[in-house]
Image (cartoon, rainbow, N blue to C red; front, side, top):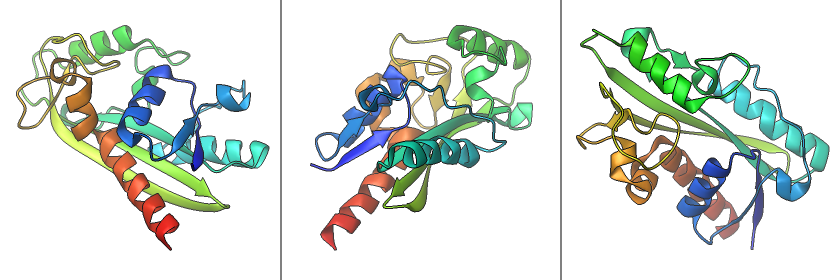
Length: 196
């Protein structure tokens, strides 16, 4: 079975990706390849951050790999938090609860709550780089709703659902999310390559 390193140690992301991909590809984490490095995300774009992480793994370990970066882009906030989504509340760490509180606070009193989640995946395979993007439009709820998922899932409501990702549940989220859409493109690419 084809193996790919996913350049993360985020357990939520790894389980989400494995659930989406199923048994088509064996997904390894950074821990699985004994990579203890917390690869810095210092680019100004999602694609730039994904490139940094994927290139680090490929250059240091020589393994086919992919990395992602995800941003929540809120219209009323001029596209923020965007590339700073994971460290919105604190520049030095990811605090999902604080991030969500800050987002709700920034949107207090605002009627336009439109938002989009974007995931960019960079795959490096045999030294070649490929980029895939997934996007889901929706809006930010006025309060947290639902118990499943992680990050901003309790406040992001994908369009035409009337519920937040946290209310929809993991299986439904994995079928419609930004990450799922990007991963599907990644899988389609790999299937095309292996069919050649």
